[in-house]
Length: 236
Image 1 (tube, rainbow, N blue to C red):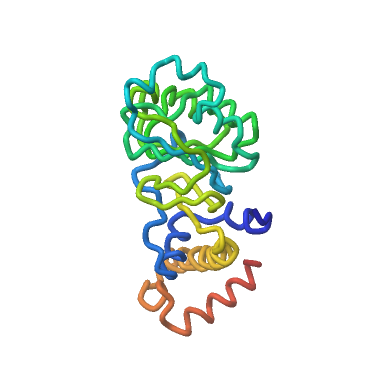
Image 2: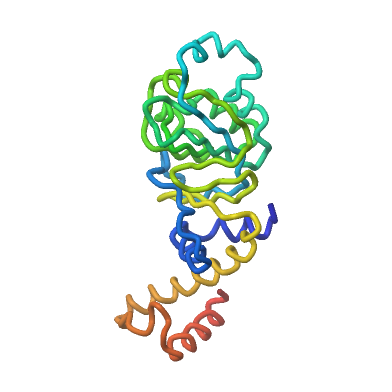
C-alpha cells in the first residue's frame, strides 16, 4: 500500500474512519463483535489477505487433515504476504479456534501485520503476549476441525458482517477493526487526519469551558476560523 497512506492511518482512530466512510454511504465497514486479544497501544494497518471457513463435515475434518501440506489454514499462514493482515471468515462462530499461538507466531515471523477473525483463537493468553496485533470474538480452545473447514484463500469474504475483499485496507485500534475499500484508502486517510486534528482542537476547547453547540460538529464559521488559527499555531 501507499507508504504515506499507511503512515496517516497509523495515527487515526477506527471511530474517525467510520465517520469518513459513512459520509460516503458506507455503513457496514466496522467488523462487529471483534476486539483485540490484548491492546497494543498502536494501530494495525495493512492490506487484507483472506481465509474462508465453512461448516465442518465430520468425514472431511479428521486430525489426519493436518498431514496435508496443502491444508488451506496452514497454506494461508505460509503464503500471506509480508505486511498484510490475515482476515478469517469463521462465520461469527467462536466455538472452535480459527488459529492458535503457533500458527500466529509463524505469521508474525513471516512479517504479517496482524490477524483478525470473527471466531476465536486458542492459546489467547500466549497470543496476547506476541508483538503481532490479533483480534477475535473470544477465546476458543477446540481445534478448528471440530466446527470449521478452511476452504478458500484470498477470496471475498464476510467477517463480522463487514465485506472484505483481498487488498482492502484494514485498520485496527485498541477498540475495533474497520475495512476501507482499497480504492478509497488514500482519500479516507487524508480526511481522517484532518478530522483527527479538528477533534483534538475540539477537546481542547471543551476542556477550556466552550459549548459544543456550533463547535462539534462545526456549524459556525467562528469555530472553523479558530480551528484554522489553532492548526497553524500547533503545526497540525
